[in-house]
Image (cartoon, rainbow, N blue to C red):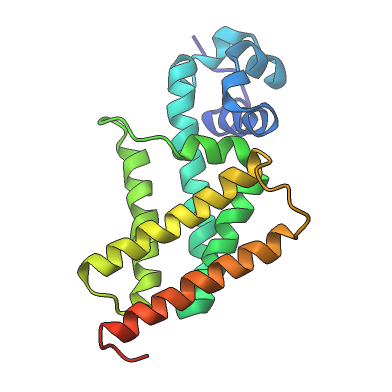
Length: 195
């Protein structure tokens, strides 16, 4: 079957991402996607391998978009400034692209090399950013896990309406980051590194 002119995988993924952000990926169907694109459902099979294939491609696509945003946010920064910029970029992505963000959280299947590669690049970026604190071995791993947990936990709780107290969310996020950064500096001091 010849692909429809003007319809390519990027166009399909952009449209699917918009639907996922608006409704959640679980509500995306090939019929809904075809309707959005103005094509018949069979036309989509020239670009994706059914709904499971769409989910896999969209997960990698979303993760790449997240990585690009995170990388750009921390460019030229170091220490606390880099961590804050990274954290705000992460939260901004989760807020503005909720469907794509949700898809980035799943574990990669063994044959999903692109998804695994980009996920590894995000972890490497976090490690580089946190490298400014000169944490040793296990402490560095704990810091990476801690930052990821803080960011995902905050984004997820916010998304499901878990914060109902009348205090600004952005201020809470700032206090949370400040506390985490103070903890990193304390660990670095206790390890004997320069404060």
